[in-house]
Structure formats: C-alpha cells, structure tokens
Image 1 (cartoon, helix red, strand yellow):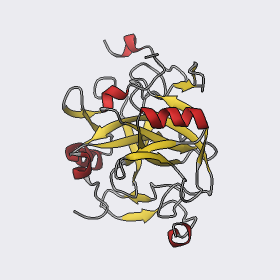
Image 2 (cartoon, rainbow over the protein chains, first blue to last red; image 1 turned 30 degrees about the vertical axis):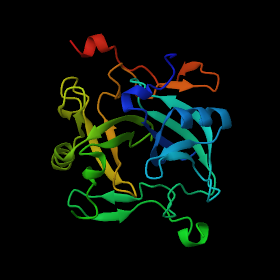
Image 3 (tube, rainbow over the protein chains, first blue to last red; image 1 turned 180 degrees about the horizontal axis):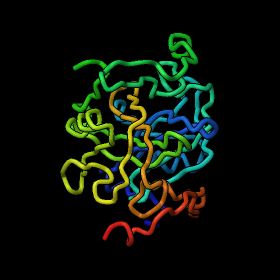
Length: 127
Length: 127
C-alpha cells in the first residue's frame, strides 16, 4: 500500500470518517468507511460510507438526495482516520433533520441544549 | 443512563471523540474515549482519552504540556460519537508537531500535500 492509503487493517477493515462542512467548518457527522467505500468516494467525488447497521455500502444521500460533494480528503498521522471536507447538499447531514449530527451540547451538569439548526422535517424527506 | 450520556456499550466500551479547535474550527485529531476518560474530562475541563496502544487513561498533553482545554462538548444523534471543542495549548495537537493530525491532503490521484502548519519539533518536546 502507498503511504497515502488509509490503513484499513488497523480498524479490522473499518475506519472512522469525519465529514466537515467546507464553508462553515462545522463537524457534520462521523461514520465508517471500508476499502470499497473509500474507493467509491475517490471515484465518484461523493461521500460513501459503510453502514454498520445495514452491513453494506452506503452512498450518503442515496434516499434523501442529500449527498455530500467532496471538496478535500485528509488523512491523519496514523493513517487510521479520514476527514471528508464536503458540500452538504440539502443543508443537513443528520437523518433527524439537523444540519449537524452533533446538535446536542452537553454541560458539565448533564443538561442539554440544541446548537445546530433543524433544516428539514424527516417525515417529509424519508417517505 | 440519561439520554445525554454517551452510549459506551455501542462501541464495546470505547467511542470515537473528535477534537476541534474552538477558534479556527480546524479538526485537530480523533482518539477514543471510555467511561473513565469521559468522566475525567467533565470533572477536570481538560480532554482525556483512552490510549488503545498503551491500554490506559490518557490525559492529552500529560507529557508535552499541550493539554486541550474544553470549551464545549457535543454528542451526536446516535450518542456514539463525541465532539470536544477545545483550546489547544501549545498550538499543536499532533505528536509529529503539526497543528492538526489531519495534515495530509490526498488528491484523487493519490498525491499528498501538507495542509497544516508544523508548530514544533517533536525532538524538542518529547525528550
């Protein structure tokens, strides 16, 4: 393997991939990538992941249309985490309709507030 | 467990935690957190992780002095990924001296360029 290639062996075939908004730099989500998803992402310019729950290749946005256009790909120092810098079509990465999956801010005391805007109603998008 | 609490069972005790710079919003690193590291982070206001290689609690910066002061903590929709928004003391998160561990940008053709500044010389910091 070239040294720019993710070391999938480290994660037993699956590595975490962070998606970050290319304009606002907000962290949108984290999902997992296997070799097939990595290669599909490079080939198509749209973010692909491996769905652990469905146990198959997941082209993000395949049902909602909310694909992620790849602007940049970065790899960490240990070659075991991937960063996709993306344009999030539809404005929301979260299946619950929020811009970011990280929409809950936790205080030291364990209280929660919502810190990412709700962009769509999931009932309208996933019919 | 409260619904604001990370679901450590999902990751067999270990969940990924992303560290993001609170000012520049650059993604600095990803490491893993267990219940002990999570509670130490809440208690001390400095990022703690679980070192998979050393198999023990890891107070980031304990040897280099480059601790991460917690500004915000966010939790994702599935409660299985944590986002630490931090002030990175010393200006660099990467043990190789770069500001971000994600210092390598990968092109479609597999070429690499360096996209994060080198802040320190590891030989000077880790003696």
